[in-house]
Length: 208
Image 1 (cartoon, rainbow, N blue to C red):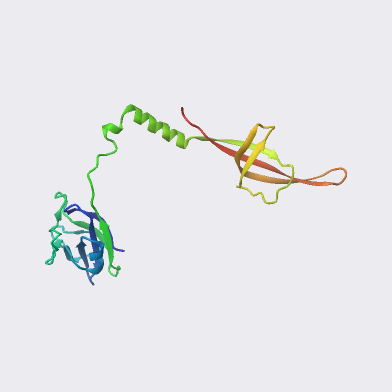
Image 2 (cartoon, rainbow, N blue to C red):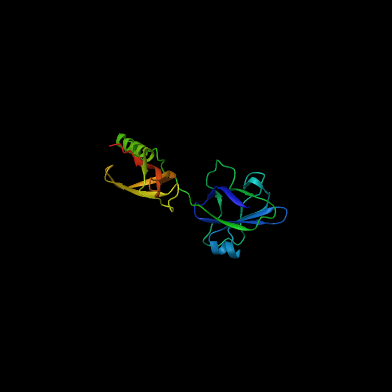
């Protein structure tokens, strides 16, 4: 499928790039608005005879130039390379038979890197490290218990709320790791069913 891999167009604004299959080659068209791109009107610039391929440069020396349209709209202007050290306006990919596609690109900005000295104070580094430690640190508490009766709807992997006065826990969320259903027959031949559960509780650790 047609795709825009990179762009290097001046003026640095929002552009709409239209890629079309023109038979043996592709055509690249540049518009100021999505409506113009859809209608094919007020085209700002174009390139014809663009080869198909996985990484094709448009506007490179010896390749297909991106040239201003003869009907350049009054609010537009001729395009050039934003970074003159690069030898292309666009890098695209596509194959013969790909359907027409329109891509919105730009504008891009020159923002300071996150590694700016203002963001690398000792306190910021410490706070960030503490956050990462707290996000990734936990422990698992395993419990084994026997229920008073058999619960046929309980399934392995289910999350249950566990309360036990004997164990001193109230409304603790547990995950059922395993279930063993046991049948007991007493001397009077009374049959009793109960479940033996292995539960696990995950607890977060926080560095203070």
